[in-house]
Image 1: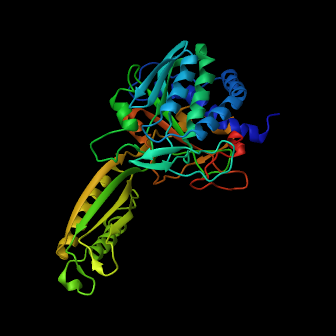
Image 2: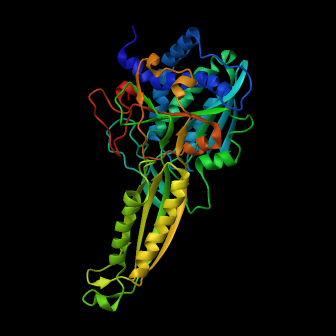
Image 3: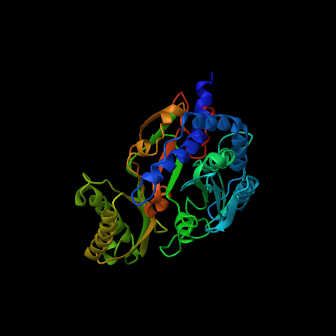
Length: 436
């Protein structure tokens, strides 16, 4: 009998394949599509997927470790993209590289008529130093916004890429039985670009892929994504209908005052004091000015810089922070309130506040009840399931979902049976998930 740990290790790969098969049913039943409802995969097909998933497990682990050992920052994923593209070509797929810079897209044409279902994984790593002593630990360096940094797959994108590579091989081996086509999307720069700071004008990652037509030729009927998470124990799969992950925007506020000696503050305008008042004022937007009973929102100032010496009031202070929202109207309203709050507080002290807000990532909004409409029961794949609580963490997959194609975004386990979790610099899939 298959062991509990074996089932857990195979759950991500099997889920991805089953999502594809169930996604065909979803795509045919979605509003605006034509044709009869495609039935969920039968028992024989499900067993074939599980058998193929077990057979490819060692390759999946090897890919994951190789990618983990050679991480690359956003828009710099050249080695990873080549690894992916070479693999997909070897499977006989039509492969397109250089999408949105370093992205890879491939199409697998099934042997039966049906819709086009896309599966998406992200490839980029983070500017983080690895602190785990394993044989495949990252020693890589990279360039992030002009500075040399350590690089690590601290968010699990090595796992996502390996899972989708393995899923591609599983499905390619049974393409004659696939109802429709599968589009495999390997996205660059999910964590943001490493070669420039977002300014609201340049685009990257998913948005650039969509602009370049990744959801067309052939037109995608539904798209699925998944993500590992340390919030759940091994063997659990979690999802949420509707808003699941928040939109993420960034703001900058530059406060200009008047320099003076710290012993004579009345002779100048203190931008540090003004900035402190602005930060406190911003907190009342989420707590007192918006209806959080409808949708939650978060405004956080994450960095503030001003002054060089203990007894000199500086000329200026710069701060930056993040905004997390689910509702588009509320997001726009909060942008206006941040500008108004900073400007009026600064004016009250005779200072000046320059505010800039850049929209980074749209909210991830899943199709209602993907577990029912997709014909997929994660519990049948050897794991457990639960409702995924909405989170203020962003995922760039929302830009694909915003296009109207999104069917589901699922969280996979990242915590072992003892409940241990990994922090920044220590992220590794647990043995119960990928055997290392």
